[in-house]
Amino acid sequence: MHKRDRPKKTTLSEPLRKRVLIPHKRVRSAPYPEDAYPVGFFGARHGLSPAQAREAQRLFDQATARRGSVKGRRLALRMGGIVSAILGGRVGNATWGLFMLAARGGKTLARHAPHLLKRASEKGVLARQDNREMRRRYERQYD
Image 1: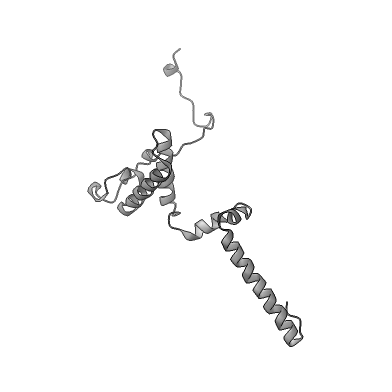
Image 2: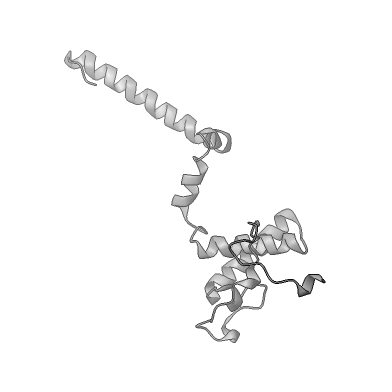
C-alpha cells in the first residue's frame, strides 16, 4: 500500500506538531481595495490595513538593515513576527515594552538601562535623607 492510499489520520489522533507562523496562510478578506496598499511584502493577505502594511514594511526594512537579509523559513518567521506584533498591538506600545523590559526577574532592566536604576536609587537616598531631617526637626517618628 502506497502512502497516498492510506486513510488520513483524524485530527485527534495526529501527533502534536510545532506550528510555525507563516504569514501567507492568514487569508482574510480585505476591506480596502488592493491598490490602496503600498508596494512591498505585506498587504491584505496578512490581514493588515494599508497603514499597518506600511508600518510592517518599515519594520521589515529596519530588520533587514540591522540583521541582514534572509530567505526561506527564516524570511517567513521574520515576516510572521512582524505581522504578529502589529496585529497584537505591540508595535509602538510603550507600556508593553516596559512590562517586558522588567519581566525577567529584574535583571533585564539592570542590564539594559542601569542609568534608570541609578537615578531611582538617588531619588530613594534623597527621600530617606529628607525623612531623617523631618524626624530631627519635628522630633516625631514618620514612617
